[in-house]
Length: 295
Image 1 (cartoon, rainbow, N blue to C red):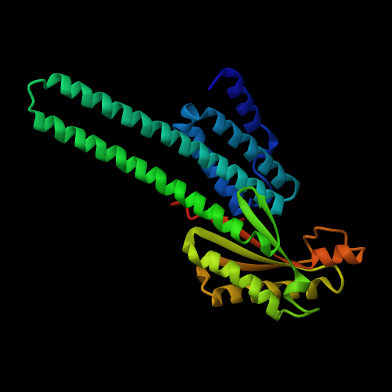
Image 2: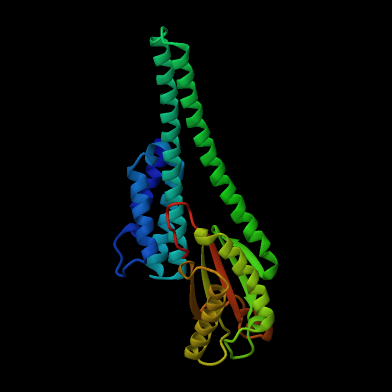
């Protein structure tokens, strides 16, 4: 890592956003801090300096969001990004180490052959076979990971027609119109909605625990805030129960009601209120071995 980059990272770490806050940080921010600490103090600091630097900037933004408004969605989202960037730095460093290990293994192998010129052809053949098997195992693992990513991408594309879909920081967010799902002031799913959600259930259940799903219910601002939150919770729970009933593992899906707290349009027009009455499916692939949950 060059002197200029080290100076920039040091400056980021010295900002007030990295100081202790009066409010407890969210679990996402705590996890991001731990991940960055591990990355900056481990091999990644030397082997993946650019990624560590990007993680430090992302963490600084998350810390600032915490200072501005503790426990906000912005804090959680930015902390998640920082966490992922720190993990990326560690993974890249691990890859460098693995590549170096393979290189050293090959060098050792060649050196051994040179020192054992009198070895039999059979021994040489066995050594070559062992090396080939190791390389094939590495290739197979790389292909497995690549295939999984392609499967997840195809799965997301197959449910694109069900509603408005966007990618958000590695997550897929599908927005379903509340009027398509429920009648006014009701949390009972309509028949057409079940047809749409059946496709979602098929995709998620097909890939088992490779996804984490959060069902979010939202309302407009008409009526009391308490009633709106209760209605949004009931609607989100109805969608979750339907998906579980169609084969989705209960452990991979959660539901939450946001009420009128997260509008995507102004509530002073009929069109805006209609946009705000919605259910969002936040679908996120789980990284192998991390058990990461969606934010």
